[in-house]
Length: 585
Ligand code: ATP
Ligand code: MG
Image (cartoon, rainbow, N blue to C red; front, side, top):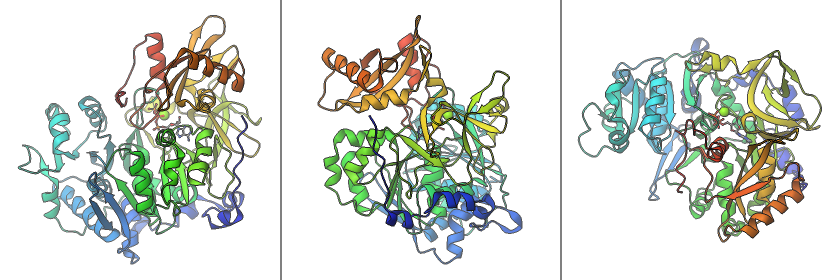
């Protein structure tokens, strides 16, 4: 089905930070973007300075920086001044223990205020911050801390006892473990974080880092295989700042809610750095996803910009648009989504539930920041990821047999999504994996591993991950288009599509479907869905087989793991499943 283009009013266009796309692209340069920030004396740059101290120095220390909502609805507010003081105390606590420039500080924390002190305090002390998902078990934690040569870990006492203590002695690099929520004596070899911070002064002089000093180590989601440790530098803050301004339309004073877990890159680039560098207030909810709670948070906190993910949106859709309409969400100016393809059905549902489209944008751990986006001022074509950010050159390329690539110029032709290196938040390497890093480049391009198409207006359309694309009877079929078609059926909550080897056509399209509440799997529904998708997609692309599942396997960052659906279907080894979300939920 053709989805209607969502036209933006001229009032909305004029009010957007990026009002005129073509003009902004023409005017933009990374040097001009750099000039929006302070820098450190002598050409230095430090993310924490740009996120916090810059604002305090310009007299804005009294502005709200963080509103933390506990599981029990307890609220803690931090102004930029108060947050800055806590960050300084943590930086001092590190420096006192001899932790210095370049040292790796890991966190294994839920959504707690300490996470912000630790992330920015580490950067201020010249260290490298690496967040871990708090739901990881001992093995994936240990593997990542080994790769990252962790010197410091900040976690809770409960996590420490369960997930770290059993193997701690095996990691020689780990010298200091700080514990939050430490009611009694801290266990042997650990430090009570609160006591250590109280003991330290609330002032700290930022360590003189350069733009190319390593700042962040982010592990990828592990959707396609073994996670990689992407290295980012302080220069990334330039990208974080301007992409927040352009793609998320962040303005000083905005109340911004990023629902991504701090254990992956979105939770740091856009859950911490970008909004703070733009003088916004962060809303952080410690609790897990809950439909009513989320709407209540949007209403009560008067959230103006909301950054979430397709999985969450699909769960809200499952509960119906009526619930959304019971809440006063009139302050909400922009809704954005990242992490997975956003089905056109979900964009249209945004119109129904909020009177606003959901703005999809695309990026990866490796790119450090948003690369392609639906902008507030631009018409939305549901199903498209939007257009490249100013300063970002994106193309569609075809790999050649000799190892080179050729740009694909014909509109709506499938090829690999590629980017011209040069933006500040591009990874500087995969830690200890030079060869894997080198393989990401060909000719003048960084190859993303995703397939996409570009239309004649320059909008990009996601096809699928290169690893997930299905080759059937000479057609290249992207799982996304098949999944989106299935989602148009009123009974379907989620779909994951794979290719299963078949002798005559090469691969046969098979779909796994989770149903909405109130619908039961049955043979007649299976037949109905087969017919429904054949009508929409045609026989060459439609699934030949459909199986029902209670839930689809997902990474902890919420991505459907098609490779796992496939391995299980074919009885093959499951590979690295360290980031697999428990499937009972
Ligand atoms: P791994 O690289 O370890 O397999 P991953 O690619 O899922 O894991 P991330 O860096 O967290 O790790 O995710 C980036 C990927 O997520 C993109 O390459 C793309 O495949 C997908 N993605 C992100 N945003 C979008 C989007 N808006 N539309 C479609 N796909 C998206
Ligand atoms: Mg990836």
